Image 1 (cartoon, rainbow over the protein chains, first blue to last red):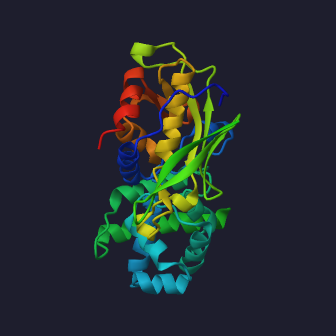
Image 2: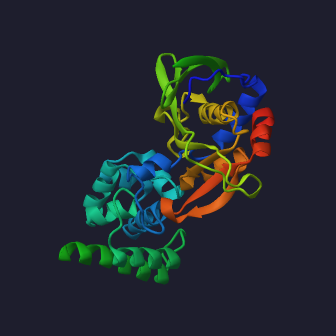
Image 3: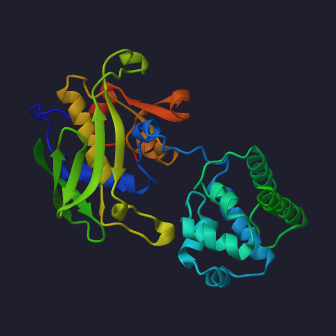
Length: 164
Length: 157
């Protein structure tokens, strides 16, 4: 910024309150110019956290676990688990991903990619994630088609970690 | 370095709390109760406008803007944050600088995907398009008319 004389007026109280309310309805205000220059913007998988949340939800339902029970078994925060399954744009913490991977016996690295916490360098994983997202809809009970989609996706996660 | 006083809205009771905007060489901090509450980094060169009516004219580029994590509101996690309105105050500072530099309020920035709603809807910027040189982030601009409206009335609901 420069040291030039300011000639603006301070924001009025009404302006500030109006903008603060608008701001509250937005998820973020983050700007990406500097982050891009520093190489901090990671190209996540096409569906990002949405697929991760869906996968965890399916894995939980396939095992007949309630949200509370899964949070307890994985030793993770219940509020975060609920947010992961219900809010498409919430990214989990690395610890949560690790705990879930251990409990569900899935590859930690692949889950980190799905959660948007690591680079997506595996086109097969992206493809599998897209297929899973396209074929699954959150419902109370896994349909046969959903069960097939879930099983296929889990198979990719496990198979690729075995080969790595 | 200069300092100016601005207000922030405290969550819960809505009381306006005075804060200090520290206008350094770069970046600028918004400080309240001795803690920084947000940060903005602005560049005045060599960026020019892409929007049709101002094409080729200089603008202020917002290189970085972030609200301190303890002010983030995350309903799904029950997090409410301490103050609100921080991003708007910082963004207003960018518009002010543009006027001071003789750029008539012209602003440019690349928004991260989760922030597109704020710049397009809450601030009223124009989405120019995806920038393949910046990992396909959407590039937004304020024309001089949009900037003037923002300073006077804020964005649309």
